[in-house]
Length: 180
Length: 98
Image (cartoon, rainbow over all chains, first blue to last red; front, side, top):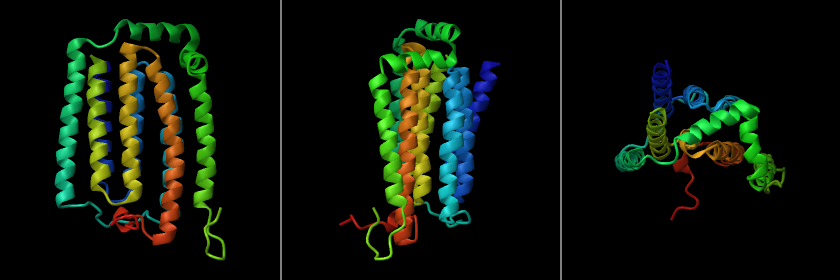
C-alpha cells in the first residue's frame, strides 16, 4: 500500500514539476506547482512527518501559492500565452548542467545508500517521540530548546521581509522619485 | 527503502527546477522553479531525518520560513520591475549588464 501511494505521489510530483517548467500560461504553471506541493506533502506523510505535511499544505500550497496568484492577477499576466523558452546555446547548456547535477546527486545518494549513512534507529526514535509528545510536540521540543536562537532570528527575518516587501511594492509618489 | 527512493525523487525535482530557472524567461515562473528547488531540498531533509533524527524536520521548518520571506520580497521586486519596464521577461532587465 505504501509503495502504491509512493509511486502515485512521485508520478504526480514529477509530472507537476515538468508542467511548471513547460506550462505556457503562468496560472497553469502555478496550478501544476500546487499539485506538486500536495504530492510532496503526501510523501511527507509516508515518511511519518505529519506536522510538516500539514504545514506544507497550509503554508506552501495555501499561502505562498495564493501570493503568487495574486501577483499574476495584479500584473494581468493570466492570458500571457507567448512562448518564453530560451532556445539555442542556453537550452543546450541548461540540459548539460541538469544532466551533470542529476548524475552528481544520484551518485552521492547511492553512495550514501551503499555506506548505510546515519542510524536506521533514528526513524524509530522519531516515531516514539511522536507517540509520546504528539506530531507537533516532537518538532517543537528541539525547536524551542536547541534551536531557539535560530527560531527567534527567523521571526526577525520575517519582520524584515514584510517591511521590505511593503517598501518595494509601494507605488511611486507624484514627483516620480522612489517611494520609501 | 522508502528513504532512498524519496532522495532520488528529490534529486529529480531539484534538477527539473534548475532546468526551469535557466530555460524560462518569465520572472514569475523562474521564481516558481526556485520554490520547486527549495521543496526538493525539503524533501531530502525530511527523508534523511528518518536516518539522522528529528533535526532534519526542524531544518525543513526553517527552510519553509525563509521561502515565505523570499517569496514576499521577490514578488515585491517583480511588481516594482513590472511597474518600471512593463514586462516580467528576465532578458529585458539589462541595466546591470555590460
